[in-house]
Image 1 (cartoon, helix red, strand yellow):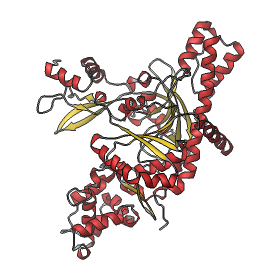
Image 2: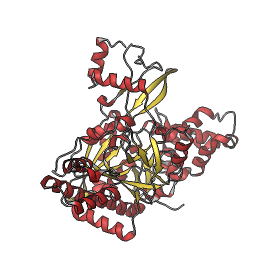
Image 3: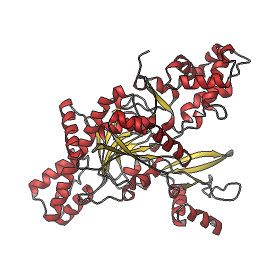
Image 4: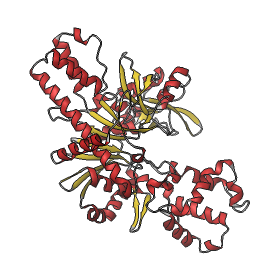
Length: 520
């Protein structure tokens, strides 16, 4: 495989090394094995359920600790809204109001999403904004047929030019919720949330990962709303931003595993997926970090329950961390006696979901201490899990890793061999779903920040097939941020209610009650 001097220059300009690129190519050649699912995690085996009394007690633990710790809310927010409007773009491409009525078009089997959109149109948070812009663009709008009106409305909403260009917006800057005093973006709702559970001395820190082309828009939005939100929440906000690093891009290859080259002869590199954000998270210095996707917000009347659960997850993290630190500090001084070792083993098994070696009791004191220190001196995450109602995405499973050890992980469907009936059956037995609702502790018992890159499992990468200008290429996605990128963390899974999980994947999701402030 020939790598020219020009290729080397390109590789170095991205902050990569030739060795790293060659390692990526080897991954393509060797392929990535599917994970070995042993069983789905359930409330009986791996997921913690909280009673109301325990919920309140954990929230209280967090509230008491908050004044002495630094907290940051980390929000992946670079996602564009293009996929959210997928069906509407299809409508613009397929519907011709000069040839058929809108009722005729809506009778098509594939027009279900458009039917729902039309039924709930006036409930959308940006309805009045788009309608006003549409009437300004089309002065004869009121004389249009119903089909032409809908076409003009959607075109104005999504397209550039005289339109609003929502189709090119990042999700975070789209109007999400309508209130009597205005319309809030998803970005603004995250500020309101942060004011409720991650404020210290009247200040809340938030970090958004954004695309470079959208940074200006986010900063302008914050300037527009800063004083308004500060007055409503009695909170000041410290906002920071970062971009997905070019050094996390991955090489694309042909089906023969040769570097895929663009028309100018340069190598094609692609963003490495959300797993690349482990680098951004690694730059955060805080005692506790909340992680939540940009589109998973609710109108403020539903935020009380959400707040309690957020605090409870953080309280659980504090409780677990205190015990872990106590054990690690003790191990530095002396070797626990047999009774203490039994208690520690029970804690690892029952609280941390760590399967102890069957012959641990036969280890020498030296190796017992080494095992416990290695098992416990890691970043910790507490992950909310909601009941699985058929949402696509990852869930909690017990897997057997390539070293033969059983461990609890968040696994994506693409990581499982669905052609294997036994593996497919185990995958389908999942009772819970990962809503990306995490609270993380990223410092060790000495107060030093972990290097999170040391806790990534590279074997949990993904290989996908894409089409570039009609040519098939293979692309490598890094281990997902809450999957393989955190595979070597201490992980605790806690059940949270479905009311805390309200992502907006399609435009019609904004019609759900969690995103509606008014009863129609």
